[in-house]
Each structure stands twice: as C-alpha cells, then as structure tokens.
Image (spheres, rainbow, N blue to C red):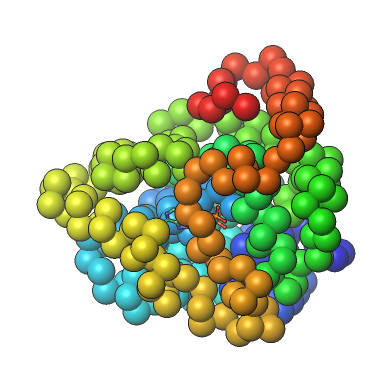
Length: 288
Ligand code: A3P
C-alpha cells in the first residue's frame, strides 16, 4: 500500500478514479453528518461488502430492482470518506445506506452520537486473505502482492489494507452498539441467502414478504451479481481494476483457502489468530 492518509483508505474498496481523495474530502468525512436513519455496512475488506451493499439496496427499496440495475454500487451505497460521497450526499434518499471499512473508533463523531444502524459482515479470515491476494493483483492502485507466501506474511503482520483483521473484528465486536448492530457472516449468507436477507429485513424493520425475500435472493446470487454491470465493477477502467488479472467477483464461495494454504501456513495462521483473539468474549463461527 502506498502512503495514503488513513481517511483515504475507504476509497480503496470502491471505485477509485485513481486518487479520489484530497484534504477537503477527508475533512468532509470527519464532519459528515450521520443521520439516525442511516444504515452502514461495515467490513474488513474482502469480507462480502459488495454483496451486502447489493442486498441492502434491495431490502431498503422493498425489493425494487431499479436501483441495482441503474445505479453503480458506489453511488447506491457510497463510501464514508470518499470524495464521491461529498458529491452525491444531497441526492441520497432516507434511509441512506453507506459503506465503511473504518474501525469503530475511527467513525465520525456524528456516528457515535446518532442512532444509525450497522450491519457488520465478517468472513473466515483465511478466505479474506485469499480474496485480498487476488484483489491486490487486479487493483492497480494497490501494491503488487508478489508471491502468495509473501502476501500471507504481510496479512498476518497487518501490512495490508486496514491492518490486522483481528483488530478490525475486535473493534466492531466490542463496539457495544447493542440493538444498533447486527453481526452476520459471509458463510451464513452463502449457506442460506433467503434467511440472511430475512435477518437484514427484520433488523431494519422492513417487514418484507417471503415473495420479496426470494426475489432479492435471486438477484443477489453470485451469478446474478456477476452479470450485473452495476455490481460487478466492469465499468471501472482497466487502468484501475484489471479484470484480466482477476475478476472482482472472483470465486464467490467459502473455503478457497484450502487451495492456497500449506499445512505449515494453516498451523501458523491458526496460532496467530487464536493468540490475538485470546480473552475476547465472542467466539468465531468457524474452526480456524
Ligand atoms: P472472492 O474473491 O473469494 O470471490 P468485498 O466486496 O468485501 O470486496 O468482497 C469481495 C468478495 O465477496 C469476493 O470474494 C467476491 O467474489 C465475493 N462476493 C461478492 N458478491 C458475492 C455473491 N453474491 N455471492 C458470493 N460471494 C460474493
């Protein structure tokens, strides 16, 4: 990662018209007026952010497919801290959906005093690592990950986008937001998408029918999203994201780490993550 200011980092997960940030947008983000009705998707990068952005747009619009077919992902659910948010904030309808990779403590002051809700999506960190490795290959604004072994070490040491996965998870698990936050995993979504969408709908008090839930699930499948130019990042210039190196919607399944980790890496990864989460009062939904 090149020397980007901390507040610019959210941009790396969205359309990055190269360096789409400046001091002005960073200041704007710090002072962004969060509203009580806002809903945030919060994630460590490569945990299923785009997937939840897509689902959230549909749930908040009662299953109307128009937004996901006409508005790119980064304008439908804009990134906290992006210059783009400053440009389009006035056009967003309430309840607004926003995305962030920030740590809980780095959210703007107005978030902390608001009643805004958060959906925190967590993914098996072994798959986060693998997905991130391919993302670094195709995202031209990120450093070349070099070999998988080198990237593996950098990930464990937190020398990647947003630092250590464990710090991010701890930050949001300790947030103490009570009924303002919903935790869900990528794996849960992969296992039962309609049930996951139902959870989101209930959390946001959207009261959607089974028919609408099913409609949302159909349009949020990996296949549907991969074919949707408003969600698959195919409109991003090749100079920013080179899909010939790796698609943004790449594999879309849990467990790809098994095709990448050596047995030594698995032991080391497990030991480091366990140690860093020692004493936390939440358990991970996967065996590491
Ligand atoms: P893979 O690289 O493992 O395929 P993020 O949006 O946080 O950057 O996460 C990207 C990851 O989520 C990628 O993982 C991508 O394929 C996966 N993803 C996005 N939409 C998905 C969907 N509808 N179903 C399953 N996985 C999805």
